[in-house]
Length: 223
Image (cartoon, rainbow, N blue to C red; front, side, top):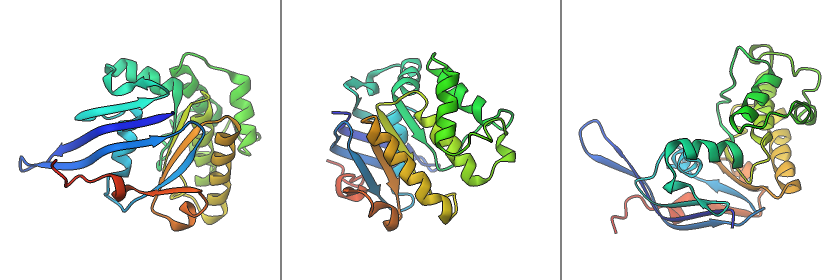
């Protein structure tokens, strides 16, 4: 099993002092190598869920188990190391460092895991169609090219789990299908589990497994 969630709870403190429940998930599983589209409306907790799974945000309670490791029980530095080594993330906003080239951005992602590999970084950028532009900085790349750099960076450490937060939302139609195909093919080749969140029916319709977040996340349930 690649991803298991058990009795997961996450709330935020509101400015007036109240509590806003965002996640209340009793059980969720994503087997190794499976690809799933998770559909939900804006503000429905999709991004919070990915942040909790990846360890960027801590849950209030419950278990997050990735690749057999309960990361919800790790201290923050250990969570950061685990995320760098075993979880790939494609954000809706690319989070590329503007002062660094496409190649350097991918290599920096590798450095966080302690295993930079220049040859593999170049191979990934070739694969996403940026072999001739790997020495360009983000400002010199189109939006679609920047997203392709982000995909290459997410694949750089050969993750066991890939999390994608609306990965096609910021690119034009010409690049949307290419990015989706690239993500899915790369994950399939390496038996990487893929959890992609989206509000687009066009995107979700391409997945065999499609789940509505509202079916298993019931933040209003106080039980």
